[in-house]
Length: 276
Image (cartoon, rainbow, N blue to C red; front, side, top):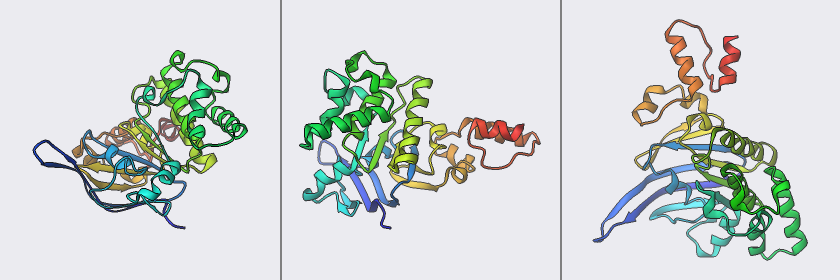
């Protein structure tokens, strides 16, 4: 099976006044397989969002190549199809809400695909059901909570039926219950629908729920592996300006006090089970 996303020698630089350039990505090589759930972590300015914006052609390489489902993103002939394959959900849902009702907002993407009205109706109903907002279809988006607005943004992307979803810190502006609901929705879409997920997050607890974690620093991928392996490297993560999931930190402190605990305890539930 070919990778869904393949990055070869990717470098990206942003122009400054006076003709100078600031490097944001340096020599990145990676692949993401169909159906993977990848968390992208790193301190501010590490290059996470810049990298993710290459996955659907919002940014194009200064040097190197990015391939999405066999399509070269820097080829203008492929850009529309690439963006149909990879949907993005941003930090602030207000930036993605464009209509006066929830269902009209979710229909915006399918309408741009020039689909028939009955197909648009089916996709809107399906997307709202997937995120649990079918009872809010006629509500104005501005009257919803922050978490509900983010779910509307997710539904709008889902209605276009992409094969991959890129989430750029989608929970950072939300309260804890809304964060859990969004993350549960992301996990379900990956597990039940086989949608490839790339989750950019500052939350190590959220990153621990992924199947694979990529840690970035100074425009490079410096750690890449399953969360059980990545979060065993506490000192390395701290040196990168990152922390550990709360359960991992607590387990580490308990081991230092002489309590025998197995490795790989990433969640509070797993830690509680081991302690019991």
